[in-house]
Image (cartoon, rainbow, N blue to C red; front, side, top):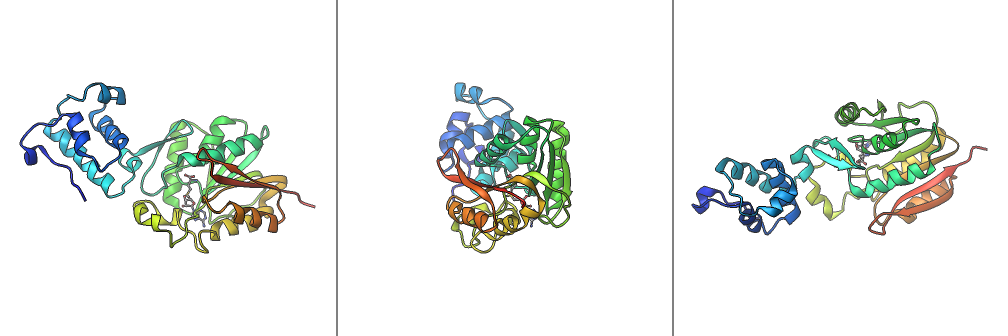
Length: 280
Ligand SMILES: C[S@@+](CC[C@H](N)C(=O)[O-])C[C@H]1O[C@@H](n2cnc3c(N)ncnc32)[C@H](O)[C@@H]1O
């Protein structure tokens, strides 16, 4: 694995442009954003002034970030924040970094949301999905849960900072919940423990990623139990893996859901599956 060179190693002052060129094993965007954060400038300034020299103390910090990125530490953990649905969310290694594909789950929920509806977000992590929905529909009542008290602390801090109203509750899926919701959304763990990609995801909380039964155990449990917590004609919306849509649709149908369908993300992958439940 390549390591970043310091001024002492090279005996000369590096410019930002030279430093970016040296990091040829890292994505260029990560390098530019690292410089933005450490030098406290915007990206336009990095692009416009590649001849800007790096002071020794700046180089030490920049190289520390570059080495962390080489060790698969997500950029968002280093920066302590991630943008999701236009909201700047604080993130820490206690929560999964919210991903752009999860915005599809938000879009699908907003399309089904009626005025004044109550919504439940299971496994909220940083609060991303719950806060995005609540930010769009201030007349909705959003409840967000997680099994992790540490994750809920991050989510609560995000809600306070953004001044968005969400009720948080610690719960293992539906265990501590009473009541019914018009919409239940979840982006649960869905990675097969045997998935080789996990090797590069060691910095993220493993309980947020991995589900047994080839990644389907949590999806299966939520689908089986959701009817007991949905209003008549309520909707369940689930994010899942790129190759799980067919199995999730089948599970929804087996649990009695109707109007079952899957929605594609920007990469044209079936990413979210939904179903509506009618109580007889
Ligand atoms: C894939 S992450 C999704 C986080 C966030 N909703 C997002 O989309 O960025 C899954 C979340 O589910 C939580 N979780 C895992 N198992 C759970 C369980 N049995 N009950 C409740 N939450 C659980 C994890 O702590 C994690 O925050």
